[in-house]
Image (cartoon, rainbow, N blue to C red):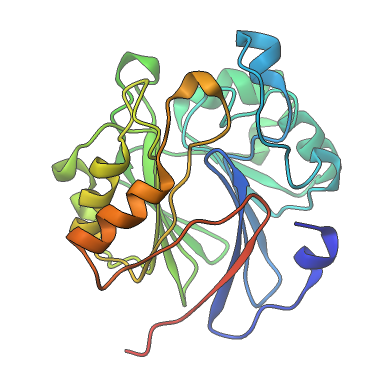
Length: 258
C-alpha cells in the first residue's frame, strides 16, 4: 500500500479497499472519499500488553488521509492509542464513529466530542452519504458495546464482523442487507470466531466476496487459518469468492449487475 495507490482514481459504481492487517481496512469511493476501519498502525499492543507485532503496517499513521474513521470497539488493536491521535491531528475535518466503549480512548487521543458519532446496536446512521448499519457483536465481557457493521457505500455494501463469537441470529439483520463483501475475523481465540465459524457466517450472508481478517498479527492471538477459511467457504458456499489479501493489497469491488 502506498500514497500513490490511495490517490488512484476509483471506477464509477465501485469501491476500492485495502487490508491494513489485523481487522483494519481502508476504503475509497469513486468520489474520492476515504474511510478507515479499525486501523492498527503502531506497536501499541506490544507496549501495553507485550504482544509483538509480526506484520509491518502498510501505511504510517502520519500518512493517513481520512474523511471518516469507524471503530468496532475499544481494544488497542482496533482503537490504536498511538495512531488515532496522529490521524486526528492530521485530519482536522475527519469524524470518528464508534460505540460507547471507545469514548475514553477517543478522549485520551484528543478527538473532540464534535468530531465523534456514537454508534449503538440496532441502528442506522447516514454519515454524509455512507450508511452505517449496526448489530451487537459478542465479544463478551472483553467489550460489551462491540459492534458488527455494514458499511453501505451505495454501489457496494461491506459487512464487517469486528471481534465476535459465532452468533448467527444476532448478525442476521446485517446479512439480510445482502452485502457484497464480508470481512470476518478468523483468529479463534479471545472469544472470536475461528475459520470454520467464519465460513458458516459467510454461508449465512452469501456475499459475492469474503476476505478474512484478524490473523497473523500476534503469536498470542491464535493460529487464524486463512487457507482453511478459503477451503471451508468452498465447501459451505462455493458461489462466494473467498480470497486472502496481503497487508496493503488493493481490491476493487464493482457493483453487482442487478
